[in-house]
Structures are given as C-alpha cells and as structure tokens.
Image 1: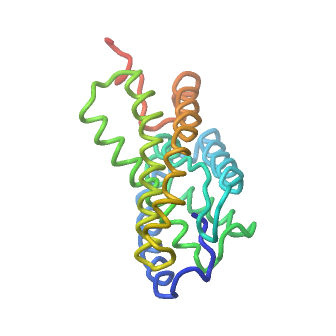
Image 2 (image 1 turned 180 degrees about the horizontal axis):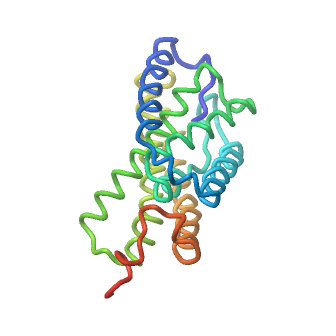
Length: 221
C-alpha cells in the first residue's frame, strides 16, 4: 500500500486521521503494557517493530500507492495481542514514513489499511478458528500460523483494492487485473515466513506468544 500524500482527496486523509486517532487511543488504553515491563518481552516487541520496518521497506510496485510487501500482522497479533500489535504496526508505519516510503499526510491511512486491517483480520481469524477447530498444537501452527497469515494478507489486499476504487484513485477493473492478484501470490510467502516464525516461537520461546499455552494445546493430546 504505502500511499503518497497526493493520490487521494484530502477528505479521505482527514477521515483516516480521525479513525486512526480513535483506534490508537483505544489500543493505548487497552494494551497490556505490564507485559513489556519484562525486558525480554520488551526487546521482542521492539525487535518486531524494527524487523517489520525493514521488511515493509523492501517492496515492489507498479504505480503510486500500489506497492507490495510482506505484512507480519498475524505474527505480531498472535504474539502480543491486537492492541500491542496495532501500536507496534503504527510505529512501523512511522518508520516507513520517515524513510520516505510513504507520505506523512497519508500516515493514518497507511496505518489503518496495513496495521489496523491486518491486526483486525488476524484477531478475527484467530478467535473464529480457535472456536471451530480442536485445540491442538498442529492446528495452532498450521491454521493460526500459516493459513491465517495467508488469509490476512489477501484480505488486506482486497480491502485496499476496494478502498482505492471507492476513493477514485484507480479504476476497479485496473485494480482487479493489475493489483489484487499479486496479493494472492504474496500470500504464499507470507504464510511460509509467518508460519515458520510462529513455529519457532512456540517450540523454543512459547512465552513470546500470548495466544499460546502448552496446557491448552499439548496437555492430554
């Protein structure tokens, strides 16, 4: 995504700022900040922000605002919950804005489309899949780690496509032909890398993943 400041009308950007401020304030209020008092947890949270800033900076694109890069929202959400994940991805958006990859006026729009939608879809999928499927280690890894990551980035791509079409930035036909299909291809890389990261975490550092508990997914299995 990584929108510039001139692609959309000012009204869209101001509306995004209003929504982002509400979401960010809510996340600040609800986030489990006590978890970050542990230096290890704080280092992991900050490390994810730095790593994703680098990953989001490595992108390809066809026209202004039509950029593609890996997301990492599912790993962040599974590891720290939706509120800390949204705050963290908002900071990632600050990073790509400061390095010139996105426009400062478009900051809130980018933060919502990439961070907000990414975290929201990841959390919804986690809750839905956890309620429908057995609580099993391999279900958590392959469904919440691999599959949910792929579905999340495809969902982000589709909603970004709809948003750009509604805002009049590009024609719907052009976006569906030249933009959205790349998210389907990107979903394989997203699923592989995110799934591998979650697998490593739950095997060697389960304390880094707030949504995982050995007693829930391994005991009596």
